[in-house]
Image (cartoon, rainbow, N blue to C red; front, side):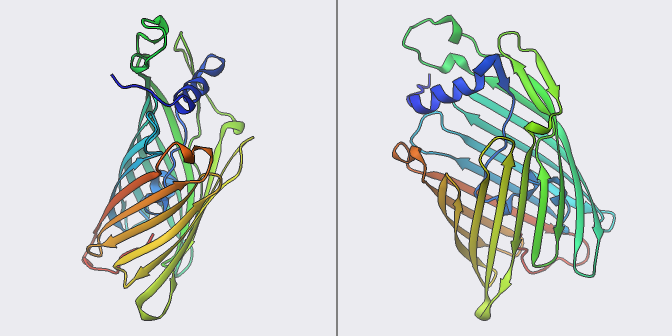
Length: 313
């Protein structure tokens, strides 16, 4: 039996989920390596790489705090019909305290050639999220507390996402709403309420550019902005230096949360491995030793052209 030792995390998380008798079936995932995992942020990214792309990612947040968030994701997407259509599938599992969520989404995107260099895509994802709280794993001060003897039932709710994505060979920008349906679950009765509300929508904006320098050096600054009604505006920025399209290193900053070190290597133009370490800057920094995230990606080039320069976004 796992012990939830950290009162500051376990109690706050549980109280937030159960507040006012409502459970909220999901939240938006957070990734430091968002620049390598963009289909989870924006469904219009599907098919934009002109290759069948597979990305796996694992994130262990706030190491040292029992019940801290952890995430694992897997996505695959590719282009069809002369690169005008993108299709993808993604799976995401998240654990926070005793709460476990798993989402499975299918994605469809349509891309338009807007100029000789640029393409604009529109994407829509749809699928389901399963949700369960393992209350029996909580160790309480009163043995045999009936409120914590049984887990909640496994519940399934629908959801969808929408996005727009523009890119050239060196620049990209996208705007997305990763959750279109507000899922609420009544605690105790476990009645599900699904509705659309503009006040619960989250908005993501991402952008980046690749600058070519002398000596085979490239610099790629990126930014991601997240906004939701009545919540603080969040900005994540990063700056990566690439050496001969083979290895890279960089720094990142997320407002009110962490500063990060990013490292990566291109084993081949198609196979890459990236790692990041987050140093917590908020009040939780005294209770954890940071966050680790690792991602591996593979691009299978389609058509007659089987070799190409590695794509940096």
